[in-house]
Image (cartoon, rainbow over all chains, first blue to last red; front, side, top):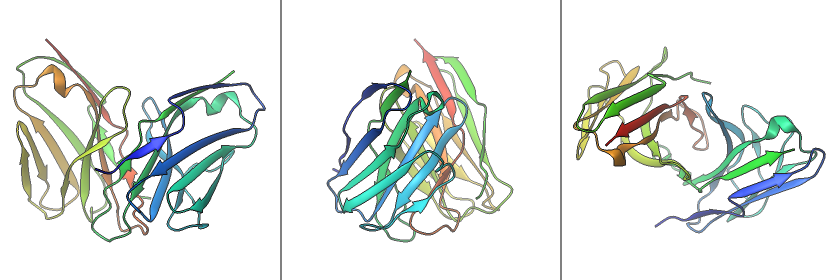
Length: 114
Length: 112
């Protein structure tokens, strides 16, 4: 079974703090994704990566950065957390094969920025 | 980015009732996926539909893909409390690198 793990289930941070969210997958997937999930807005893509050290902006990249130094690990960084970044953050991974875009999700990190 | 509209946004029903959730787009889907997200967990894939007119069954869940590949539906027969969750449709829409676009989801609550 594919396993995607996220470093924390719950996180409370203060405005202006630097926040790191870590995601690790164990199935040698090329693609990895970071989403935020807010009520009524579904899943919105922040950033994704299709290979080590490669990254692409998603639909809402402002205020975020990412790092992919190893294939299995994809980090999301909030350089200076703000209250409007309070959300559920979901990481996912998938194979890079057309027609096989199934994404495997981690359990999510619920971030509260005070 | 292809836009997906899901309806209804909320559904609250009694155990044993039937229900249908819809996913629509103004553009043709290359393929469409349905995910279920249980409270406190990440979404999990239920099914992928690819061919126009396709019907797939997963126990009490029936998935249909419209002939024109612009819409899809998920029908649940005799809903159970264990079906409670958020149902999401998603499509690759011809994007590269496995990127998916998701609808806003349907929150289903099945009361015992």
